[in-house]
Amino acid sequence: MDLLDFEAQGLYFEQADLAGVKELIATAAENYASGDAELSLLKAYFLAPESLNVLVALNRFYYYQHRLEDALTATTKALVVIRLTTDFPEDWRELQAKHISDAPAESLTKIRLYLFTLKAVGFLNMRLENLDLSQAIFEKLVSLDSKDRIGAQGLLELVIKRKVTTQQSEE
Image (tube, rainbow, N blue to C red):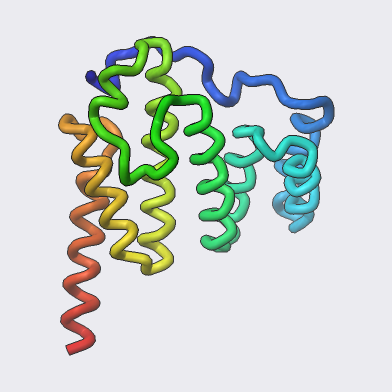
């Protein structure tokens, strides 16, 4: 299955949230420069902890604040939320190409979102120097995406180079 050959359906940002959540996210965006964005995002999270709109906003906020562990927490939660809308195994390590190829075409948007979110988890782990985990995630993505539509191959190469550099500096 070509991960680019699909018609986008059910995009996460088109999903309706509980009353007030959209406004809290907008308030956070307005207050980003003043440093008062986090409280609005956390209020939105408490109202809608399963909202991908909220989780993506939290991820972006924490990432741009260089709070990578917090960004990883939000992204990992998003991965769980997305997985629940698919027929994927609980552990991404058990994900096989068959899970993707057997999925109905209308679920390809969710599948892509899951794979891109898993890539983000790998990237954040790479930034946090969790290189073995990051490498495993990127290897899994490369094995599932022979045409590299998700773009994990380059990140896998970076992680491997980083591991070699780290090993050489320790010697």
